Amino acid sequence: MTVAIRKASSLPIKIVGAMLALLAPTLSATAQEYPAKPIRLVIPFPPGGSNDVVGRLVAQQLSDRLGKQVVVDNRGGAGGVLGTEMVANSPHDGYTLLIISIAHAVSPWLYKLNYDPIKSFVPVAILASGPNVLVVHPDLPVHSVAELIALAKRKPGELNYASAGIGSFQHLGGELFKLIAGVNIVHVPYKGGGPALTDVLGGYTKIMFSSTVQTVPFIHNGQLRALGTGGAHRSAALPDVPTIGEQLPGYEATNWWGVLAPAGTPPAIVAKLHDEIAAVQNSEQTKKQFAVEGADVVQMSSAEFGTFIENETKKWERVVKESGIKAE
Image (tube, rainbow, N blue to C red):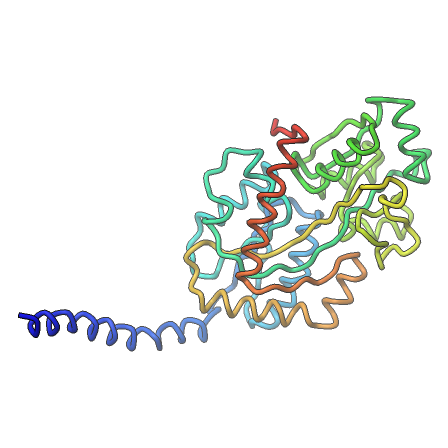
């Protein structure tokens, strides 16, 4: 009886072994043949924002390395939720990718989601990080953080600041400023960083806690005045601009960007994308461009990036709940 059981139990093992042996070349071929067609890179915000700037910078060089076009697809709405949900429901074949930022870690605490921000995706690679920058339209008669705080205290509720939407990096940076400075500046949410910046450039809204990657060119050409950057140290892209923390102790706000794929995307394809993105990050062109825009290249393994997203999600749950930020 014992011998019969051993023979019966060994049969499935042999079958499984044979199946794995047949499957291994297929898995290898999948990575070797990928990509066989263009890849869609979804940016869940309108053109012109920091996600868009970072996504397009990476897409251009990734297209060259992969030999297939990486097509940028802006799908804005609901603080990035609409585009993110679309990717969560896309085929997990490596041909639909998603650019995310800090908004991805904040959205679970503001919106009722039809996807899980962690389980519905597989982390591919983190790309970069960069501080925010407090900018004002030149018409606003302030030239420092102290002057802005003084003006806001003289005119409570009369000054407005623009953001990419409720729960966006710009919104969080603005609310943190209000909390520490003890001022009442009215939040004006837009459908993305691009539309928000357009209105600030036009002088319709005078203040923005923007990303350096979005605003540095407009600071250099005089269309915006920078009062301070949100990093722990001065930005190499704006060395003459003091940090906000130098003028308002305790203030620090830094954004980050990365790439996700739908859950179930083959590990071999994820690994290939990670390696190709790392090569793009290591290029002098990318490093120089990020430096010009005021951001720093950040590299992690896919697994480390996954842990980073989980930690960020937990951190911002506390911030959102304690600050009382709510979706409208």
